[in-house]
Length: 303
Image (tube, rainbow, N blue to C red; front, top):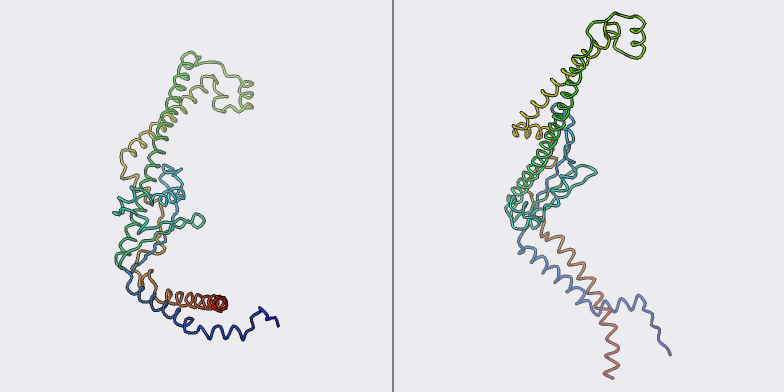
């Protein structure tokens, strides 16, 4: 008579019953061992800081426009985690052991995480990485602002040189232009129709008057450019003032401030104990069926 290879629920019950000691003792022993190790394992505390980063649209007369991308600067700070530069600023050999940084570009949030052996140490390190991150952002924005100001100064000097050359040309034409002539209503009407300033078109000498007006406008433009160059030069000689403007433009809002955690983040005895018990139970049941599968073969060999 052939025996069926299929296992019934009754067969499963007897298999589990025969190996009940193993199935009970394995998860219980694993849970007790892991719980004891969790209590003896050195504790690690974690403090997380959440910072919202943005740039103010208001700047001093547009002098701080076109600042570097804040998202790029924040991601640059995240990429500095494995560099000696950040290690020196944080005072550790390997920043990745105690610090983590992540930037969420969609929400504009910078997540800073610090770990320590005590709650106080974790909170202190969280304050340190927040301070280092703020200094990094302000310093790079300051360098970008100074570069923009130098570029604006150079452009203003080029514009001033061009305006001065234009003024010299106008003055040369004024020297050879007649300052007196008979007024002609027909010519004046034609000049006004072409968009010429009515004051120049109706003058006794439209050409001379137009050149004089151009000279006045050019002198005004030169005076404005000289004033702008003087302002930029004076501003560049005051890095403290630029830094203050950058600090005002950089909006760093600490949504979650550095704080001492109440409980350690690692180890977690209760969670680890439950996981060890479940895994031990699964391993015990699996071993029971393996032992049951090997048992008939051993019996046959013995026979």
